[in-house]
Image (cartoon, rainbow, N blue to C red):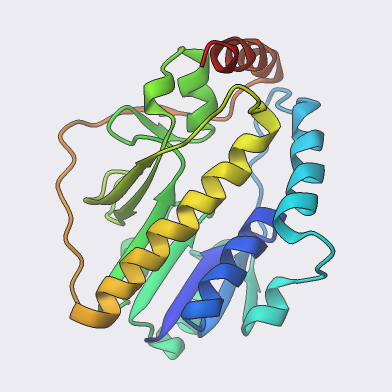
Length: 236
């Protein structure tokens, strides 16, 4: 199958791409470099711990880079005209989106089998950015899930293929959550690719509700999330 991954150059995305390519070689990886800059502070120290943890646990001593896994193409936005032309030339059967901005309809329609997105949350409750953190902020721990859904013209509104709840323990830390999520993303994606490889078809269901859209979480609320997360896992 001709699979193209649209993502960003981060440790957890590199790990994800590597795990996919072990079973399903990627035709190309398209890297989006644009970063949203909210008009308020969003950094929290747990994110430095998160980055260090992911480098150690996901990649270890490996010097793996996205460019070592497949042909890479870099654009400011996945919706740039140059990116559109590149995807057309690749003629993918499957597009997988993990961590980029919203796709234009002209890109969504290009793959012949499926255009899929990995969303860190339950889109029927939480759409947009930092959705795991927003679920924690609302003490809605049952919605610490990850979703693989088809891409449509909305934001996280496409038909759901898989939805998996994240597994936490008494010793889980907030800085470990993204790595836990990434492992789930790998498993769901491999299941979907196996189904498409075997049947050329992917069962899915319509979303029964449209979740609230959330933007980036401010730093001060992340501190609140840290306390709520620690309190929750201590009671598991």
